[in-house]
Image (cartoon, rainbow, N blue to C red):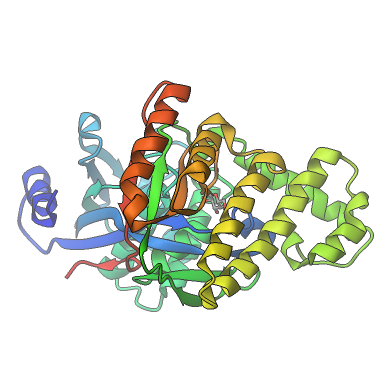
Length: 390
Ligand code: GLA
């Protein structure tokens, strides 16, 4: 799909008059630091070069018209600024509408309607944040069309998270929207979610690439155990706070956690908290390793992250475990782990250039045999964050 074709689609659906503006927001992949963002810990995601394209034009009335080239069968969805109601949609327009609702909630009034066409090349439900990408691209569009230049990209990321939490009912952290709004080509973002301070770290993989394996097990965060995990962590933190003053699980060192962990009454909940604490420390170590060019150590920490997500946090499942386990067996694989929320979605692996072909063939065959359907593989590049199309 070419960018001009998306604009052409807009013209066909909504006419060619007036100023039609184009925007892009990427998807993201998290290298390490999973389920730490709502626990005040660190994450290490990067923006991809695949993402969501949007063309939009302001209207004089209060009508909203949406069309997605990914959901042709749904056709043009019509709504109005007077019909925005949290958790009322059952299709993709929940994401752009949620952003309009959020702008209004935050006092950045959207007083005129618009027409919008969307095209995304992130596989839906893959765990590469197609929904956060739609939220952020809508934020970029609203800021531009309605002249809210005082809003930074970080503000738009926070609006995206607010929209996801309040309008769509998923209690996600800030990682996805932040990575998408703030990404930088060939860099990952080392983000401290306790205060949103961040640093860009170059990803120099000399002789290796990032390979994403999509399990094709469909899931939505709404129907997953995501909100349940989050509340398990909140309960565990409250139990720890009875014996120790601490702001979040991410604020604990491993030694501190080991000292107070028995304050957590339930053994399952204790394992959830353990993952949050250990994963945060692993992320800090992994970034340090990368800075020192210790790529093998980085890979080892990725593997340990998967094991912790499998055994202590229990968000992997047979599909992701198969992908990771088969990857670990392959020659030339530096590290491999599930990425994103889990419960389906993708793994991310670092694979030496010369081994990629064999990796895809071997892991692909083993997955098909065990799971009964195919996985998809993508060799990806790290791109820039969201913005206006030139
Ligand atoms: C989803 C959420 C993020 C984060 C990850 C797990 O992608 O949207 O906020 O919690 O899961 O690390």
